[in-house]
Amino acid sequence: MKHFISRGAVAVILLGAALGATPLYAQNENAGARIGFVNTDRILREAEAAKAAQVKLEQEFSRREKEIDEAGMALRSASEQFEREGPTMSDSQRQTRQRQLMDQDREFQRKRREFQEDLNSRKQEELQRIVDRANRVVKQVAEAEKYDAILQEAAYINPQLDVTDKVIKALNDSK
Image 1 (cartoon, one colour):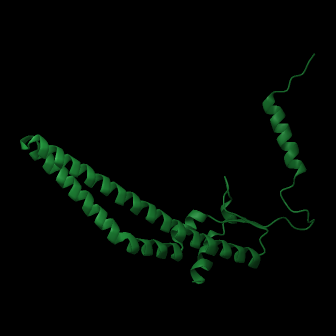
Image 2: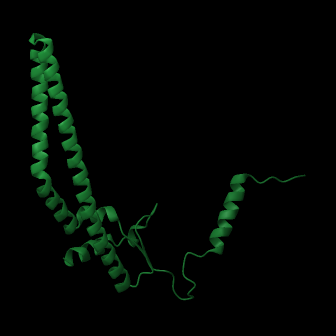
Image 3: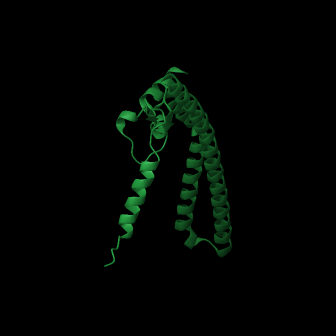
């Protein structure tokens, strides 16, 4: 009589063997690895440096954003006016006005695209500065508290391993 083992059972057996063969702790007889976790998204939301960077960007780009909003409203108004007055215009006037509106729209789209590119570029610069500082602080916390590893991404993490609050506090204190 033949005995069959399902593929799922084979996978479970192999996984068990693999986990048994690779311990999750250092090969030190007296101590396991000390592991922590830091939530980068929380740092980027809650750290004072991140909040300050957001305010700085808003101040830096608010004037341009207002100008683009005003240009969009002007374009919308001109388009609505054309819709109302178009039927009473001569063909040449209508074509001229349509070309003007298309040119105005093209210019508006170009300015909006440039604004968005500039804003995204500056956001990335500020974000990178904060991430660099946060990584230095994470390293300092790890060294000071003798962590073997601090992870930044995980499918699941025990809340007891989360050192995000310590990192945010240290980041805020290190201005």
